[in-house]
Length: 201
Image (tube, rainbow, N blue to C red; front, side):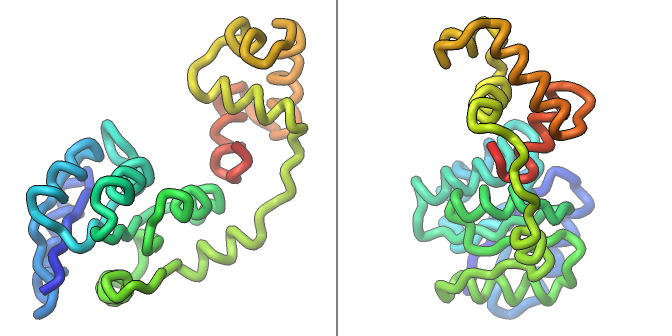
């Protein structure tokens, strides 16, 4: 029997997914949580074989939780579900040790088959996500623009970024402005989001 943990913050989706998986003779749902920070404790307590994780969860996102599971419970496979075919997500998922990566609108049968495959040691990636990753646009940002955006993404202000990168405050502001323009972003937060989605940070 394959022991499955589900992490989904929308209750109706969480309960529906659990009900669908429980219909299978070889699957049993041993835990269902609504927040990312509950995943590791629930996986430990339930001795889950597979964790099916929504990518966007309160407190801790699914990819960060997958990385924790990889480090703390390497025997527990992870299948991440996303609503968006973003190449940056796929690259982050692979770096986090995810075994399966599927779009949320995939048929239930594909998820069930993916769970069985990852338990058997295979890796499963939705074809649309793989194509999106292959069609990734070239990064228009200069190396220093990426450095500055990466630090800005952590919440660092221009003064702190300047110190950490040995740049002047004005130079940091120029890099942030040029990154915003190159990405056709509304502001620095939007630029960080775009660059992260594309896997450039």
